[in-house]
Amino acid sequence: MLAAAEPLEAERDEHRARAEQICPDHQAPPVPAVGEDTGDRADAGLSVPYIANPENGRGNPTTAALTRLAEALGLRLVVTLGPAEEGSATAYAPGIPASLVRLGRTDRFRSVVAVMAPALDLSADEFSGRLVAALAALAQAMGRDLAEADWWRLLDALLLVAAHPAGRAP
Image 1: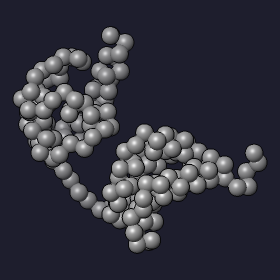
Image 2: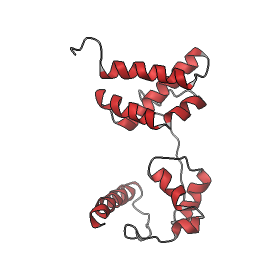
Image 3: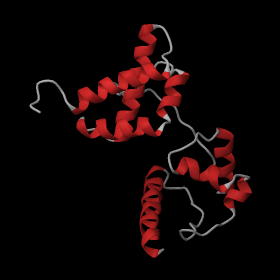
C-alpha cells in the first residue's frame, strides 16, 4: 500500500506547488493522507464513483457538481475562457458532431490515438484533441454528421498513414 501511495503523494505535492505559483495568497485546507476519507465528498453530496470518474479521465461532471465539490473543499470553482493560442488545434474548433463525441469516448478510439500519437511525436492528449477537431472540421466541410462506421473508415485510413507513411521503407 505504501508503494502505491508514494506516487499519489508526489502528485499531490506537485499540484500544491502549481497552485501556489498560480495563487500564492490562497490558504489551502490541510491535505489528508492518501486514502483517508475526509467526508468532503459526502459534504458535496457526490458519490465516490462520480468523483473517481473525472479523476480517471472518464465522465463529464457538471459545473454544478464541480461547484459543490469545490465548496466542500473550502474552495470556489473558477472557469476562465480566453482566446486560443494562434496555431493551436483549438484555434478553430467547429461544433463536434454527437456521433464523434460518442466515438471519442470508446476504448477503441483511445487505442487508435495511443498508436498514432507516438508515430507523430505527440502526446496522446494533444493528438486526441487535434484529431477530434480535424474530424469535426471534415464533417462540417461535408455538410453532414457522419455515421460511426464512416468515422472508423477515416480513422483506419489515418492510422495506416500515421503508422506506415508512403515513402518510408517497410
